[in-house]
Amino acid sequence: MFRRDPVKLALARVSAVIGIDTGALLGLTRGVFRRGGVLAALRGEQQVILSLGGVDTRGAFELASVTKPFTGALAGTLVEAGRLDWEIPLARLGGPFARLPPHLTPLALSTHTAGLPMHPARAAVTVFTRFHDPYGNMGATDAIASARRWSLLAGAPPRSAGGFAYSNLGAGVLALALAHAAGEEVSAAGYGRALHGWVTGPLGLGVSLTPAGAVVRPAGPLGGGSMTGFGPLVGAGGLFGTAADLLGFGASRLGAPPAPLLRPAGLPRHIRGVTPGWMVSSPDGEVRWHDGLARGTRTGLGLNLRTGTVVALLARGTDSPLGPRGVLPTLLLALLGAGREQWR
Image 1: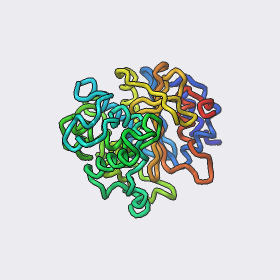
Image 2 (image 1 turned 30 degrees about the vertical axis):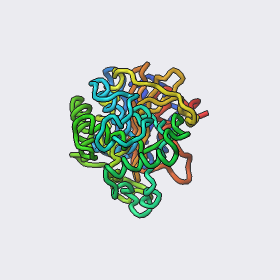
Image 3 (image 1 turned 180 degrees about the vertical axis):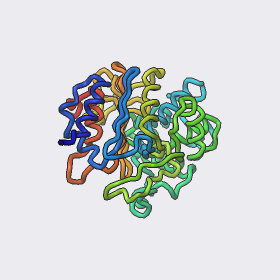
Image 4 (image 1 turned 135 degrees about the vertical axis):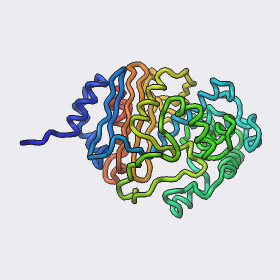
């Protein structure tokens, strides 16, 4: 007897939940999950969490840059509580942030419009000498000082401020400031406690810096079985979570208070705007998403505010060096109803 195609079966089950014809996505889905993973979707009262390639659906993945929506949610919660304001400089928090220039605001850092570079300067070396933990030789004060130095070198505000420039440094420094605003220590651990106290704990999610359960091991030429470290910049990419965690978090965002939506210069062609923690890829601003790339795993989380759809993709392996880049975001956007036209 012929064995039914597990990828085709998985797409059929997802289609039944999200109400989108997934027939044309078979090849794309095979490419994303060629080393296995978890495909999950939610809409209304229906949800599905599916294993591909034998990967445990309850296993925790490195979320990598899918951490950023959680950091954005923490910022929004602190704004709602009056602990923070999107437009007020972090310098007003005092303490180790007192000497930061005034253009470094929670809104600018959470939307990559502060003019900061992708990484602290030392990462140009440590990405080779500390491949799996390039920020690990830094402390929180080093990260904050790096943001200040880059701002002063470029002028304050730098000419690039206001335009889109993706920055792990900016997101990581914001997370440290959120820990301070929440009354926690300015450190990676302080950020973890603040996130648990204000976001993941109240939602009953297992997302954390130190997963309690089994972790899905990295795969591929860059994986080597080691986890990716983020040092003091954990708010940019250091969280772990399961597919169920991502669906639960995404569902909570469907009804969250609205955050500012910006359309800065310099956006890639498939991104129509940015909002704290999220990319926006629909003309009406309804599709919010983020993807993440660790050394041997890839992640994606997105939601459609209009349809109430949430999709999570957790895959072992990285983009093939011989194949097209951005395969996972393309699949994520298609499942959210944004479609391939966003890439034109």
